[in-house]
Amino acid sequence: MPLDAADWQRIYPTALVVDQPLSDPRYLSLPLPEKQGYIAIDRNPLSRSEATLLETLAQDDETPVQNPWYAFLTGQISKAPVRFTGLRVVQLRVTMKDASVSKTDFLEAAIGMFDDLLAHFWVDDHYALLIEPLSTKNPDHQTLADFAQVLAAMETDFYANIQIYVGNFWQAEDPLPQLFAEEQRIFAGVKATKPQSDLASQSLAYFTAPMRAQSTVYETLRTRLAEMPEYAEVIIALYQHQGNMTGAAKALYLHRNTLQYRIDKFQELTGWSLRDMDHLTLCYLLLIE
Image (cartoon, rainbow, N blue to C red):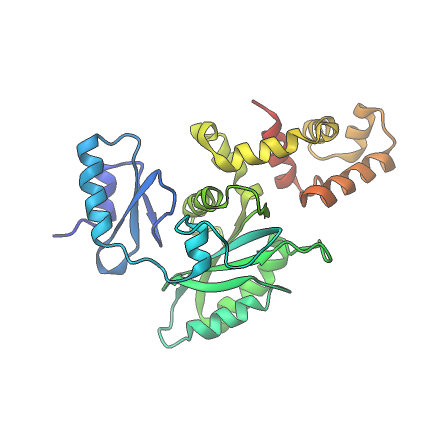
């Protein structure tokens, strides 16, 4: 008799229940019975014989998604379908309460949240990806707050439960398969009660764990922030004053307007708003060792 999620987690307490196989090579993903998703098992504590057995079981059930963007993001091919300077991957986890609702219609409604997309597709019955290019002409991309109202309306229109994870914007030269794999893992750890999430909102829960030492996402962002040392004292002062502009300006011996200018410039360069406590916390976390 096939093992269900509870059975697997009794054997492997750190295993994750996910809607789709994780592309992160650290995890082995095995299907659960009756299309209840997958169990993702961390390879690190496994013995060699355990890993070999589970790898065999995983390979027997592999059904690769026939989409060139998914093949690129999961490292199956090395070249992207089209050229790009930067992109972010928006993940949707969707549970339709009415089986008669068209998934095609749902995805068409979802893409209306974006001015432009490189691709959009279903990975499986409950998991979809929307790949958004970085725009140099219009840098004001949607935030979690922008998505919230639209998704609430879609839940009513399509009689569905929707979770969204808005990925970070990555550059073409970044290690995208590794970064996407980790963003999948971050999303897999988001509780079902949290409809909208992104890296900033999940940063403390994720990066304060021992995972930081082996995190491609953390190291890539930390390196990028290290290249802008002039903003370090601004981030630290704002964090220490809980985002209070007046207190931070005094601590930095700056006029409040000067501090506002630096915050605006930082957002222009990175996309992170130091006025947003989640974004500020993420930036502060990237500065500490």
